[in-house]
Amino acid sequence: MDIRHLRYFVAVADELHFSRAAARLTISVPTLSHTIRQLETQLGAQLFRRKTKSAVSLTHVGRRFLEEAQTTIKQMEHAELIGRRAARGEAGSITLGYALSACCSGLIASALANFRKTHPEVSVQARHIETFPQFKAILDGVLDVGIMRVPRRYPTGFAGFVIDSEPFRLVLPEKHPLAKREHIPASALLKEPLIAAPLEMEPGFWGNFVSVNASNRPLNVVHRAPDAITVLTLVAAGVGIGVVSGSLSRIAIPGIVYRDITGSARQADLAVVYRRNEASPVVSAFLRSLRRGIHR
Image: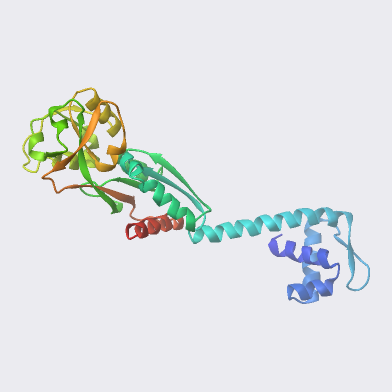
């Protein structure tokens, strides 16, 4: 039994006439009659009673089978529609990982809003996850796309493109002597106690301190924090100072101030990262939407 058997049966059940049903299906009456006989043989039951040569009525089994046949056809048509939409990237699901700065800048909200306008039936799950763990999550298939700090190089099997850039900003305890100044030269920070990321997180944070150390002199790193929120918390506690991307300066924590850094040309870049051999149509559609957003 296949969908053709069900469609032919429903057509005869609707018309209660073989000639009219055959005309509706654009097939010959003998072909339609043969198909209905095949169906009845498979079911082991008579579906129609003959009234005249072409006119028929439904048997009790036929009436019951009609309900199921109509439901099955609708389900199969829906499945076919979803399959075609998925093949065009119009349906499906995506899991997106993002660094905190991408959220604070409004980039994530804007990207999702733009994509939903053109792909309302695609479900996007967003997860905050730091830069380095995003690579493993994408490799393992836990994430489809990551928005993260630009690494020094993309690992084998990954590709990416820069989607946003912003200046670095200095975060200080509010009572720090340098907090009285609105603009602080990078050279004034070389001897300051700095709060950095853990060594294993450096692929996402290496640019922070390069931005304040163009001379490549040794820096006074006194503590390593696992994420940006911890950096801000430790700065508020007076442990040291930190360097964060500009969007993170929107986070208000008592006891800290943000200041501009002068004398540094380096920017905090965010990249969209994905599997180089990505084959999913819906993920490809999302990547195209992100690329278009760069030029708006």
